[in-house]
Length: 241
Ligand code: F6R
Image 1: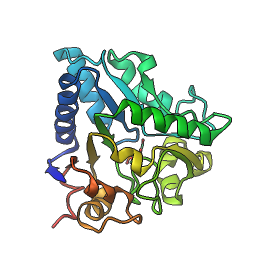
Image 2: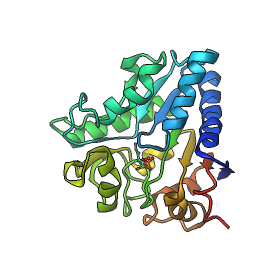
Image 3: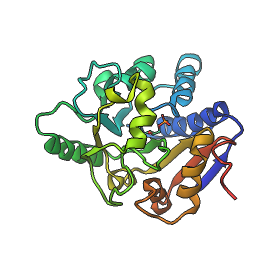
Image 4: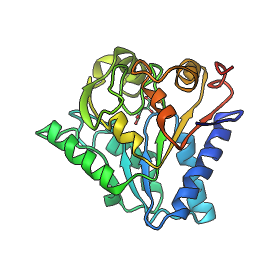
């Protein structure tokens, strides 16, 4: 695992954008794995800036999201379908139809997850952006997720419901059920790029980098990947020896 410690979240965004841009310009048909949540937002803003000011082109890219809430229609502002468009893809030249996410309103959620897993795996993600939850989750693989899990419906940990209530104006409005790429699915990407900023991430970062590979800290599976890069700000790196 490669660990890069930067000073501020803005520095993390520049380094992460460098890595993503190298994949975007280095492949014939780049496949981007995108995360939502707060952590990658400065990176998306930096990529949008490079698109506008430096001609970084995403037209040949396809993108796959990690996860989605069950029951939120695509048009709901907090669906990840809508969020990734609002925060990133609508501001660059990637075709809208090339931005994929699992359908949290599908009648048969298990079948939708199996379909999505097959598609993500067949396309082959070149670089997968990841954040980490305060409980160590990646995607929505909460503690206890099998290390070889595939895309599936699952239930959020109460800590994640609390963490994500800021997007919904209160805990009661946060959907409890989600669809997520599995840890096994995520591990198939060519390059894993996990970003963490802020003091609340120091604990999970110390566990994922220096602890055992364990379902108690799902992000620790990065230790099993041949090409994993972790980019941290000083606060998130505070627990590293
Ligand atoms: C979101 C996702 C989650 C977040 C994690 C951290 O698509 O997969 O694993 O990356 O919950 O969220 P933030 O960045 O908001 O702290």
